[in-house]
Length: 158
Image 1: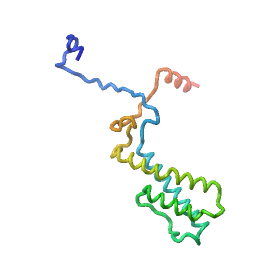
Image 2: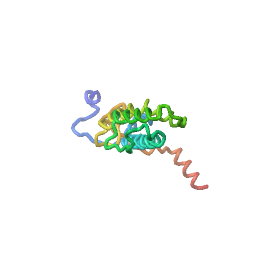
Image 3: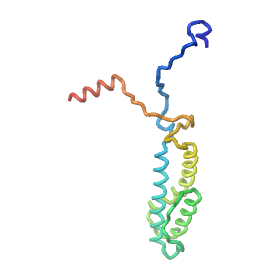
Image 4: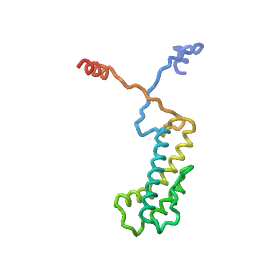
């Protein structure tokens, strides 16, 4: 409006040139929908592996040895399943890596699933969103400069 006040710009005709402005966004400032689905599937698969291992080691103590199948993986269900597995393997001689995985699952998986649910609500039908501005979506831009092009051209000649 300053330019209009000084008479340098006429507001009767306005043109858009389609200029794209690249934001200063680091790789951790956005959320991808596909990564959320992949992470949830990974948690589900690892939980099923732990359940099978627990059934093999402590079959007598475990009353419910049916394999786990989740329609909708939820933090509460995962927490209960991890507690069942932990109780079944409590006094058993098990591999150190399995103990570590159970402790990690107990500590992180329910909170991660809550976070994934919140992120999916924000996503809606989009594929991604920005953590700093949830209404914004990301586009991948080609970040080639003349220097990169020259290097690529030199590499092609060799």
